[in-house]
Amino acid sequence: MRKISVIGVGYVGLVTAACFSDLGNTVIALDVDEKRIAGLKRGEMPIYEPGLKELVQRNVNAGRLVFTTSYQDALKDSEFVFICVGTPSAVDGDADLKYVEAAAKSIAENMQAPLIVINKSTVPVGTGDWVAEIITEAQSKPIDFWVVSCPEFLREGSAIADFMSPHRTVLGSLHREAADKVAQLHLPLRAPIVITDLRTAEMIKYASNAFLATKISFINEIADICESLGADVKEVAAGMGFDPRIGKHFLEAGLGYGGSCFPKDVKALAFMAEEMGHEPRVLNSVMTVNSLRRGMMVNRLKNMAGDLNGKTIGLLGLAFKWNTDDMRDAPSVDIAEALSKEGARVRAFDPVAMDAAKEILPKVEMAKDAYELAEGADALIVVTEWNEFKNLDLERLRDSMRQPLILDGRNIYLPEQMRRLGFTYQGIGRGYNGIKTEIEVRPNAA
Ligand code: NAD
Ligand code: UGA
Image (cartoon, rainbow, N blue to C red; front, side, top):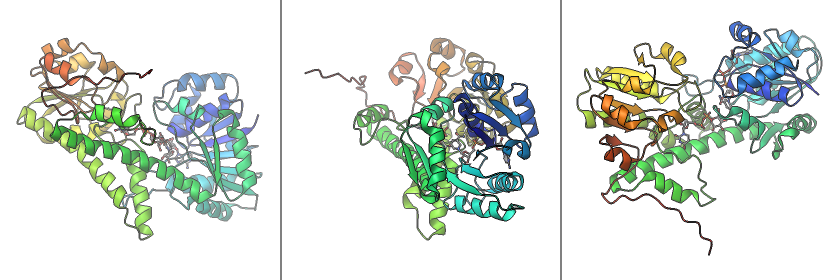
């Protein structure tokens, strides 16, 4: 049993705190947001993440997990401190490190004994060295500390499973002994542990996110070509994915990548490259392709429905992806704003993100469910691929709409079935040449 402090109780910090306490450690989780900590003490989660509330509750009840706003309390007797604060984009595209800087200073001012400072936030290459400088300068008396980078690879919506069963743990440090101690903490996760230097670990995180974003922009470009040539991108991706060199994941064409990570991380990596005098040609193309996806959806609707002025458009889904309430860089925001600009009345339904969305999209009217959303709508746009949208009563939906028009930004419906049901329907990259059959994959036992 070890004592761990976690700084920042957002999507990464709260999951890290809950999971490490569930692994039998004593964890004290800190945030500067007093409301968040007060809520957590009452058992209220600041974010929607499946399974998190139960996990937090179980470990709080067992006495292994506590919350605080006091750095002094958080660091007392701790052997490890994880920094999990936000690193949003600054205006120039660089990562804004003000929260990391503040956390490092507070650690320096409040540590009373030797400490391993582990950075889990996604930070530009070189930040670990900078954090070490900040701590050294801000300490009132010299106390030993060691900085280790431990980037996080979890996804929102499946954060607990991703944390508990990672594909790998990456650790970077100039001090192998400190890295070894952090490696010990991660042994119960049973994943390969890659130990390298600080800067390489920081780069592994950016390169991983940028590669996944590249896959998404690549398949979106293929989707556009498919549409023009009468091929179906879903089946193209399925056919490509059997090759293990390509892999079947992250080949869903759609509205492009959003959320709090890929957009900011690709931008920050491009910024780092430019600062060093490299033109990031691939990354720039990835961002260009991505930036066109949302506007394309609105143009498509105009082509299909005509002038949008006075029309009622329903958005199925608001969160940047399913299984989360996160609205950061969600395609729904740009789409709703563009539709409003065209004079459309915009309505929406999302199973969990409506509270978060109301503040960002005050003009959007929220419906109580997908069926109410469809009533009198001139078109529906599938923005988020929630499971519950996949099995809607489509005939009921069709009959209550003013025009049975669906633009499916996530390819959750079958084009053939939608046409049969009498919808004017368009997915993404699902070219149609009039002779469409369903893809068939036969096992070959010969
Ligand atoms: P978040 O915005 O959800 O949470 C950050 C928390 O830090 C907030 O609660 C905030 O109040 C707190 N905070 C800010 N300054 C603080 C300070 N000085 N001391 C204590 N607390 C402070 O952020 P997030 O989504 O959890 O992301 C955190 C980091 O992890 C980012 O660098 C992000 O890129 C990275 N990351 C995020 C994910 C994800 O899925 N969200 C996955 C992997 C990595
Ligand atoms: C992503 C990474 O998957 C995590 O490994 C990483 O830890 C995290 O960023 C981070 O660094 O913060 P997340 O943003 O939660 O996780 O969500 P993803 O499931 O990766 O989706 C990101 C975006 O890409 C979403 O907008 C999603 O709709 C889109 N996407 C994803 C596609 O358009 N197509 C796909 O095939 C996959």
